[in-house]
Length: 131
Image 1 (spheres, rainbow, N blue to C red):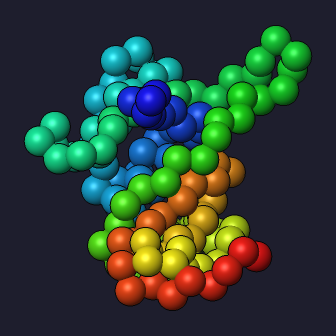
Image 2 (image 1 turned 90 degrees about the vertical axis):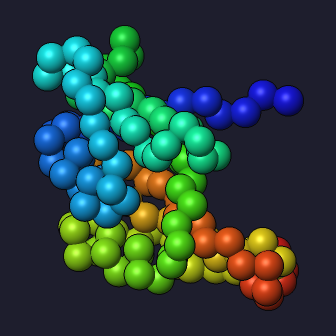
C-alpha cells in the first residue's frame, strides 16, 4: 500500500521556520535551490521515518496560498514537546488526547501557520472512545 515518502512545509519566512524546527525537533536543513527550497533531514537513514522539504510559500494558480496536509512526527515526550512548541512561538490547535493502546497525540501550529501532529507511543494509553 502507498506510504508517505516525503513531506513539504510551505513558509512565508523560511529562515524563521527552519529555526523553529531546528530548535523544536533538531532537524537539519540543506539548501538546494537558493532562497527557495531546502531538504529537511529528520534523522538517520538507518531509522524509520521520512525526510522532506521546506519551501518559500507561493500562491497557486487560483491566487490561494498552497496548503499542505498534516504530517505527524514521533516524539519521546509529547508534553515536553508541546511546551517547547509554545515557547518557540507555536500554538496548540488540538489538545493532547489518547489513542487507545497506541499513544498520545497533540496537534500544533508552527509560526508559519502550518498544522502538524506530534505523537508519543504508549501501549498503555487509555481508549477514550470516539469524540
